[in-house]
Length: 212
Image (cartoon, rainbow, N blue to C red):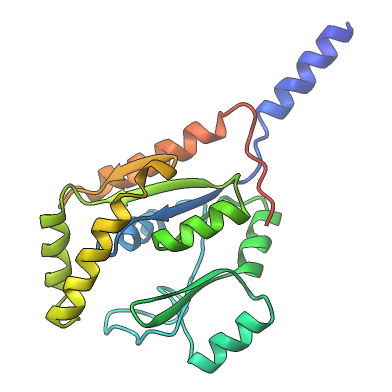
């Protein structure tokens, strides 16, 4: 009888996994934003973190949807009040993950998905080691260069800096939990790969217990 009670308790614990913090990272142009946008479009029941940034808004972006576009002064006020789980300066602009947004979503039992650069992922790994870290990359650096050129939003010098940084970021791959290759024209396959990882983590024993 006692064994049955213990078994039932263990089963209840196994079937009630805690919410996950899933971190998508990788080089600029890998398709992190595209993967998350597609998941939102499909109505997936996750909380998608909206990152704050000081960089200018691109014509197709929406404030509060793609990013929170802040002035340098607004960003500094949030940073001074410990408002960011992680922040960094990338290509001359600041990016930060709002801490309270993540806390509230986890407290509501929602899995939280965010995208950060490789430097930011390293910081979050130190602060929240129980998060799930996924490295997103195109199939080749040549494909990455094509995507960045297609944006047409940067000078030749800025593009070369991004490519050089991407080569360095690829060396950080062994510090991630999973790899997702986002091939051109196969976005839904990359989305399915991310969701398969989340599904597998939900069945992980012991469960990850995220504290932010």
